[in-house]
Amino acid sequence: MLIPFYRPMGLEVTTFPFLYNVFLAWEVTAILLFMVIELKEKTGLVIKRGDKSRFIKYYVLYTFVLSIIMKFVTGNNNIPFGGLVGFSAAAFILIYVVKKKYNEVIDFFYKYLFWVNTINALFIVVPFLNDMLPDGYYFIGHRQAISMAWSLSVFLCLIGHNARMRKNRKGILITVLYLMIATFNLFSAASSVVTGLIVIAIFVILYVVMIVFKKFNTINNIAMYSIYIGGLVVNWLIITLNIQNYFATFFSEILGESVSLNGRTVIFNAFLRAFDNSRLFGYGFCGVRVSTGWGGGWNALDYAHNTLLQELTNGGVIGFILFAIMGVYAVHNACKTDDLYIKKVTLCTLAAQIAIMITESINYYKYYMVFLILITYISKINIHLKE
Image (cartoon, rainbow, N blue to C red; front, side, top):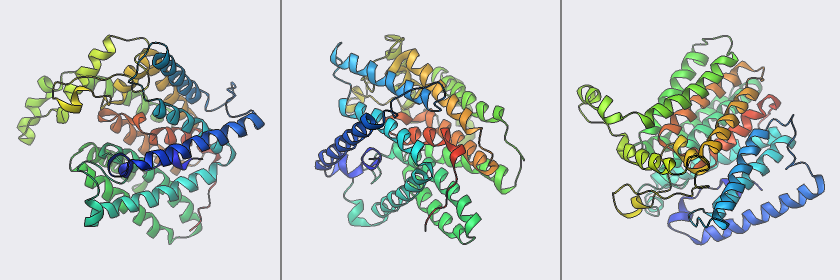
């Protein structure tokens, strides 16, 4: 049931559009199967006070209901119905499976992303495969998705490494191979999306300090909350401060070049204006198209290149509050794990996710939601990965 929602989309959106119908049929089949299971067990959609994933469900349900109303009642045809249903169904199905078989889900995504990354690398290095995809696209999908796939892949890889090292010291070779392939993909995309380099730097620095050099014998809850909440604050300051006027001169003197976040300040301003016109409820899931003045697709852009702006325009202030609470509560649950190594890897990945939020819309894809759901139930972890 999970594969169609987390499929690599590079070939589908560029070279072989018929794949969309294949995976759409697969998604519908998965949703119908989930509905049959739900009618039988009546547990997946129940939201109780003790449900660890209840705030994720609140956020997803709000997004779905709001978007349905805006699309079919107020007539916002910009909202992609298929994308909305896929986003919502994927979250509920994953929560259901994670509750039943957490270890198996970790094992599944660990192996699945290994092969996705490996095939993606082949599409980069093999000429005739590389020629199949236009510039800016990879087997995984658009280059913007590579950093998101990398962060989840590395998170799963290092958790898997922890399990392998306890069972077999030779597991370090598998870990190194996994990391090399995923990071090669990110460096290939980072030639045009600098976010990837920043994400790697943040993750590596934290990992080396906390794990390689074995600093910090504990990670308290305040540190975890500070990374998330502080990261949201930094995100907000970046999109509201005038980057050019305040920092361009400084960076020009240091680096010898101007700073414009690759034109994203123009996009930020366009989405801020859109948000000002619909502050409370936004426009629904990917429901706004802004004009940057650059022509072509840039005059009908639905991708904010910043997670806060994407959430504010998707669901308004209410949607953003639910998004933030969802993240805080996931961190709250992650703090309950007794495994210091896993807590440190979680903190490193969380910091990387925050960095991605600055210039990308992480819920435009589904990797971030997988991460949140996995850390929500991470205290259940007890994996023994198969070779």
